[in-house]
Length: 460
Ligand code: GLU
Image (cartoon, rainbow, N blue to C red; front, top):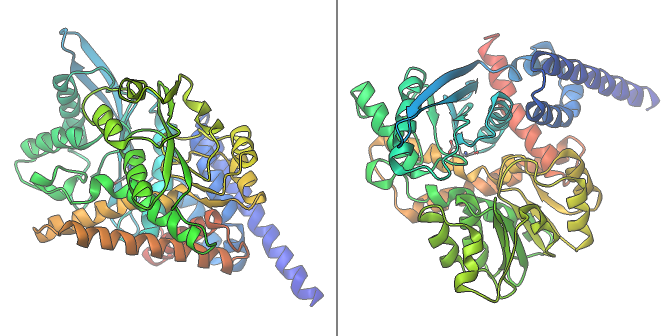
């Protein structure tokens, strides 16, 4: 008995030393890339019990390989603005891992985009995509371009220039970009048009998130937000909690936030606050989603204008303070690192019961630790927001079959996928000694699928 315990302790220590060693290399090889370090450290630390139990992953150098992108492409994106001035942005595409399928992941246009942001997103995407059960590898792209205040023509010229370089690196069986912050159906349309022209072929499977009139899938616009609510609902169900009658706060007012609000409301929740970069609104009667949709889907409207139609609501110009609003269920759907330890403490003090992440890496490690210690139900991004990329994979499937599935069929598949992800995360957490910890469970379940494929495909 004592011997067994000692052996177990030894293998855990060996696994921990291995993980620390590889993480040190990641830090040294990618200096200053704080978001990438944060994402790798977070996932690496979840994997210690896996390496302790199965040394084959260490022997095959899986961690060393999985944390080094297969390819990182950086390129100049020159374009001419409406005043005739030449502008230059920097474009990126990280092709992180192709062991279980072609590279797949979104495209972010935001001034904050740099190699660290793209690599953290691409790294997360490997595990998220594996969790969906679909045959898709991990990738991500974007540019440090701000779509804010740009005319349609400027957006078109930018997208065309971005694609003029990207066309050399993507294809329906190679790498399939989609949207993310700052990239929606309009941008995907412009990029698809340019790809088609440069290739001289109609290959709808090269991009997902397309308009339904040229190969887009029904439910894709709603998929991340709806999937988030399906996932949260499954977590809550096991504890006897429901959306019905709950107070919900959703940060953000983009695609993910809007459809998360829609589905939460459909299930009987009252969504009392949402935000954008200008600030947040609080409506104690419950947010009117039609107004938000009108403001956000048609041009450059800000949530502050909500008060024009609903004067009883309140606007605060600091979006980070949205988390001071007491709620039962918190759904961060804005961007990375919006929930730190202080905000987590405020949420816990105000009685939050559930936190489910719609955006990528919204909570930092300290915040996640606090949620776990306080037994808050926590749905980690790579599981809870995987519905978007899952339906992207269904869009690719429809494109290769040259047919379109009805809304109900795609929605049902999305539902099943989210339930599967939930069960896989629960089971992995249980098996590796972290019962109920979906964060660790999701990291482990995603890793094992990719790691096993990498072993079988040899050292490539
Ligand atoms: N950008 C989304 C994500 O973070 C969707 C990616 C896709 O559909 O390829 O997962």
